[in-house]
Image (cartoon, rainbow, N blue to C red; front, side, top):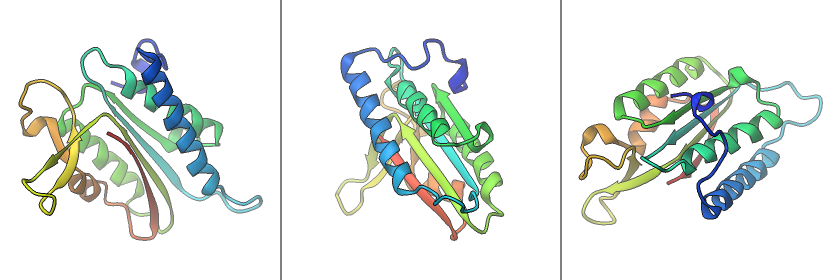
Length: 173
């Protein structure tokens, strides 16, 4: 489901969710100011990859992505520089989306990729030394199976941002 297909765009379900959305947007705005292109400089290649994994009856992740989308548009990102995935996600859907993003940036020799995730997370492993963080894409079924989980190292591997391209990650999980 696309960001723009979701009913009630930008409406959080509670004051807390709305406050969290404002903080996410503020943090993104600060990060963008710090990475601003000087006046007269050539516009670099850039791509924002925005992901919201919503759970049943919880629209806060979608609200986060909507706020991020609006901030990026106000900061000059063109619609073709934004990829958005929002809704009830599965591992296969998320990885296919990231493969599409990879195809867009694989040949770049410079530029920026913004990766924003809003949703839930988890850790795999029995000790802190073994811990591997990941995304928990859905709250059902419990316990979640492999199709509801993606590890961060898998995300970075599939996204495959070239070494000369700056990757900024904004996780909210």
